[in-house]
Image (cartoon, rainbow, N blue to C red; front, side):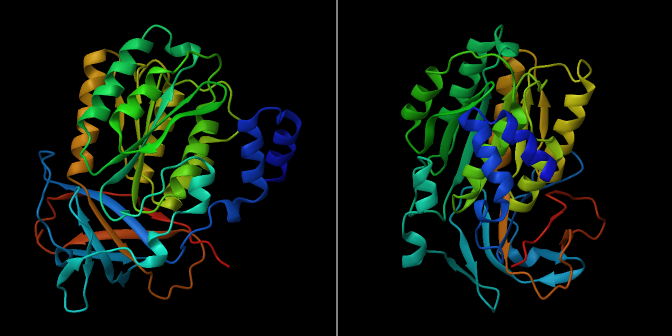
Length: 338
């Protein structure tokens, strides 16, 4: 960490890198949130990859380091969040007066603070506008615009772009026109600082209550970041923010980036797609949209656990005697102490 701070201090001439320096110096306060509440988003599929829907909280057993956890809230797809009562019954979840107040930290970065935080997904699209994307720039914009138009009406979306630095042309909103207009103002840049931009996007997403995901649309190679990809992955993993990646490069053309994308997405409960053509990019976005609509999100307050390091999360299904169903979720997290 000290080495990282020294490096950033030398090159911290841009606002984006300056923000990363601040994060490195004050990592705990930047990500300050309700550390006791764990948010877990996951999908359940059969052996053919078909989604398993209409499961209830009683169908899941969540364990943390082998310790059973009591599910506090439950959400399927874009349905309303339900509170799980002690007798196992469900009732609609509504924000308290305190939760309904605008989040000051979210407002500071231009986010659309929401009082109806218990419905829909906050989708952050991170669009690579570096010189690697010159040839497919217009087609990429069209694919993203189609994705935004097709989101569920309860979802909010933010459009961020990056090359050497991060821009926020469309902060989090439910207004699809505003999001697409922000997208259309994107301009091509130079070098690619993907992991710097992804970290800053995760910082913004962490300040927003409710379920959120980050979707990265990139050509792949990173030649401008000061942050290691595994450091970014650890933040997303601990915050419970799934990362999806759509790479316009071919999987075999850049084995390093491909390996990083696979690791980041699988460890956060997301997925990586390689989509060189416009049609494949549209298909990848459709798959992600389908994923969001068929996912489950549960929250719980961890039972007493002396482990202050990495805690392994396991999700077991009560109605799967043959162990044929597959759960895709982040494998665990590191709790913040103090």
